[in-house]
Amino acid sequence: MNSPTRILFVCLGNICRSPAGENVMRHLIEQDGLQAQFEVDSAGTADYHIGNPADPRMIAAASRRGIVMTGRARQVKVSDFSDFDWIFAMDRSNYEDLLRIKNRCANPTVRLVSFCDFCKNHSHNEVPDPYYGGLEGFDEVLDLLEDGCAEFLQCWKDGTLR
Ligand code: 4NP
Image 1 (tube, protein in one colour):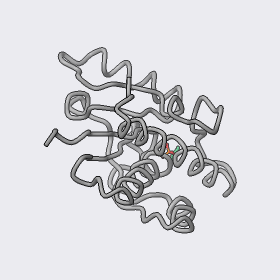
Image 2 (tube, helix red, strand yellow):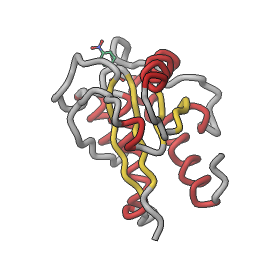
Image 3 (tube, rainbow, N blue to C red):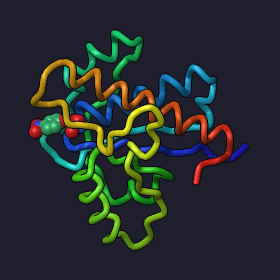
Image 4 (tube, helix red, strand yellow):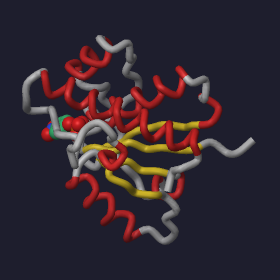
């Protein structure tokens, strides 16, 4: 069997968007029975929340969709750029921070992409940071994540990932 596809979701704090991405993707993978084919994780570019669980507002919003939020925040590290096949950046600033690290890596093998490139039903260029906003922001994040994750998985199944 092929080695698993390894995906890392990255945002700023690793307590709202990227852990939600990790758990939305895992939820979809489990629905398809593809657990053996994937490894999914998340991290933050910042160190503010290392060791913390996800934000309770995101835990509650995900729970309403039947998604259980697991994991504790960690910061992105250089080895992520060779340990993962894909890094999904949530917003432009995350992407630029990640690109700067990638450019310092001796042998980066990862594909660094902007997550919203996979969204089929939304025209957003970024997954907006919900941290300082209202509760509706957390649902908007989940809408985008469900859209892009479903599309990524469909492309993976179709063999059309470029
Ligand atoms: P995240 O959201 O990047 O989606 O996890 C944030 C979490 C914390 C902060 C900012 C964004 N903060 O400034 O502490």
